[in-house]
Image (tube, rainbow, N blue to C red; front, side):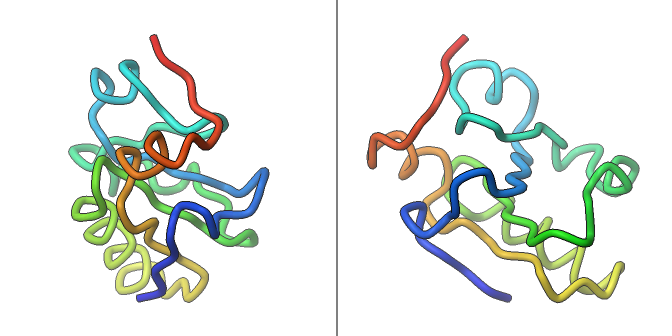
Length: 99
């Protein structure tokens, strides 16, 4: 599985946040789309497989599981786990939203 640091995620990337809705509502990377891990398999069709897929969570664990699912079940090789997750994103002062 490919992994990048938060500072390596391109601007306007397809960014999928797999945290639960309450976590996502609290703080999120600007432009991220929420597809919670608890309902991820059922909602994965919302992901565009023709673009690189950056998967993010709070720190990198849940996003790694989601990325592995996409690689194994869908056969997609353009899935990238965002190491450090939203916590690292906010700490790096990258564009984010609260509330």
